[in-house]
Image (cartoon, rainbow, N blue to C red):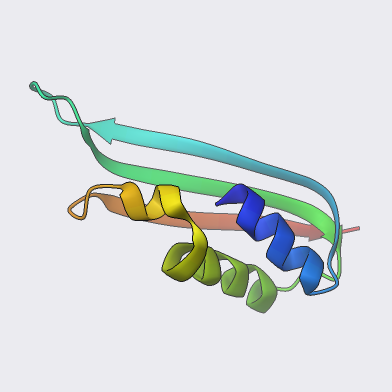
Length: 87
């Protein structure tokens, strides 16, 4: 998802200075200990950033392009949050 987002934001004329994604996960307490929920926290710094552009990049990645996202269990809860700073 990170590579997709950087590519989409660059196509939207965003000048990216930094991009960081932290991922937190919750696992099933008993075997098999698969992930039941994950939270992605994205931090972007650059020029020309807007919530609309970031949300569009997230949407494109989740809905269409990210093969890893589409390989996750269908019953897994996935939450994506973001923060950004224009410099």
